[in-house]
Image 1 (cartoon, rainbow, N blue to C red):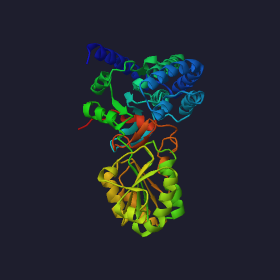
Image 2 (image 1 turned 45 degrees about the vertical axis):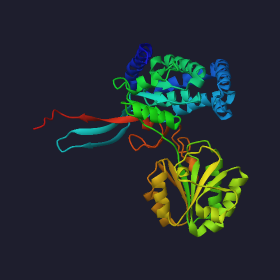
Image 3 (image 1 turned 90 degrees about the horizontal axis):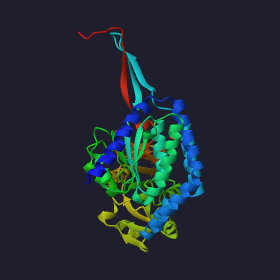
Image 4 (image 1 turned 90 degrees about the vertical axis):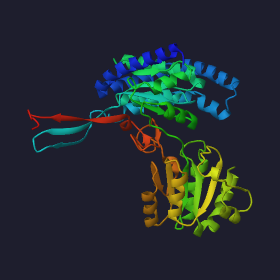
Length: 421
């Protein structure tokens, strides 16, 4: 690592930390005014954003990025409008800062309140999609934090252009523009500096491929909230409504296969497998899904099913590929998920309330659904307004992370001269 990178990143983080002190004191009205001004700046800069984005796209094509990655990278008029709308939606959310979570009075008269406060300085490391720059900044500003954004090198020009508009919006509302910092170097060493800046950074949230997240976790001395991967399961129980199960499984796999809440493994109870699998797998194959099945699955549907190996069960394909396994009970489904799942999202399809309860109690994942698609694990779909990511951790946050998850708490205690004896 060069001394220049270290000095540059620490200088950036120092400025954000100082600004975060001011952000923690900012009123809801001022924060909302900043978010609305940021939205106006994004709209005003639309031509600039598209011009800078065109340079990123040209560089991406020259570097051989896939069509899928280029699509994620592209800023259209609709996506720019979506960024501005997202900023306004966050402004309309209730402010969590200062909310009293609980309160009580002790026998000695001390009045104790547990109060929400910002985390402080949040580092968000992400890849590809430049709209994350605005989304992540909005959530951190609303929750009274300072934020350091480090996007992927493929979107560097787009991210810088968005960041400049966001800073103008902050300044227009009288808040420090340094509350939103952007790492302008594409040198990977910058991530290493942020990972060990315990004196300046309070938490790191990496969003991206599993390799990026593992790098951050292995190198960080700063707390990390991580989302490793989404190996999501749907279990079709013996008491399932099979027509409903077909609709849910098709949606969970095919509606958008390249996202973390798409189904990657389908588990089917042996009592309904012979009835359900031929119909379901035919629908998957019509949709272009490659099926990798256990031995029993291949006995029931011998044509067009590839042999599933042990490596398939924990795999996050992010593609039109599906692992299928026949199980003998809900408990066996739960054991499979415990062994191979990633703690993201699981679902059961059943009309048996007892089996639904057994599944929801036995599965230890961030989100567990009964008779609904795994695709609903999303901050917007949960009514959180937006999300900073989906945590597969248990501490400090779990599942879709909205603005409340970007806060912690402190105890505020009022007395009348009490002394401890």
